Image 1 (cartoon, rainbow, N blue to C red):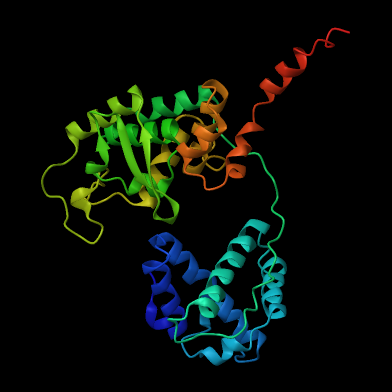
Image 2: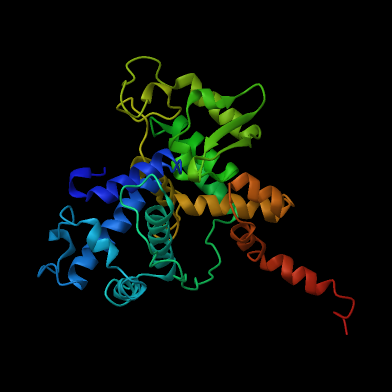
Length: 330
């Protein structure tokens, strides 16, 4: 939860702008707040505005826009260097913080409605570090079946719900936040489809196969009808509910999947909820002959380059392609 009283006015103004004008999701707003709070805590150290070195004890609500006006690209580079050397942050982590800083300074320099308008943008020529390219980790088809079997264990009183969630992860490749955010009204059983809200508050349609349809139908039959909490999470609308009869949370889902992985004899430190998304995408690409553009649409990737990682994971296809070369037999 964001504690606005701990932020300077210009940061809260940016968060409001990101919510109302940029239409960013609550998760994105939290990330912006975290990244910029960390950046400004570093700036206080860098500008000798505090003797404190522990970020937890550095307050930034006393910062004014005049301090922001003094920031140059060299200061941003110093922050990124600090992340790399002290926190050992990976290029992907630094890239995210660079993106946040860029958006923040663009707002201050370009939005005429802002009372904190700057006349120069220190992040204008800020470059993004080259990301490490790694193939995604995913479950094999056999391991995916083991996980589904573990999820359907009737010794678990919530097995119908947990099996439905696992089925959606492995068949649809949806994100954790997307699954948690599903409302009952988002499901159209007559059309076999589901609407989810992805990154950037973008809505997309996912068409459900027989396995998903059956799992959802079975769960709706046992989903609590009474005693559901009326709260800020709109739990009464939620598809998946916790035992406390409120919208199920991210950590609860992660805990459930970890238990299922262990029960299936799979390494829960190697795999995670997000790896199930990779698994779904990989299985669709390997076995379903899914067009890469269709896969991009299904996963909700903004860039095709993000989806293309799944074209490199099937070594068997590469081996088969080489074997089919007319020169293969010498």
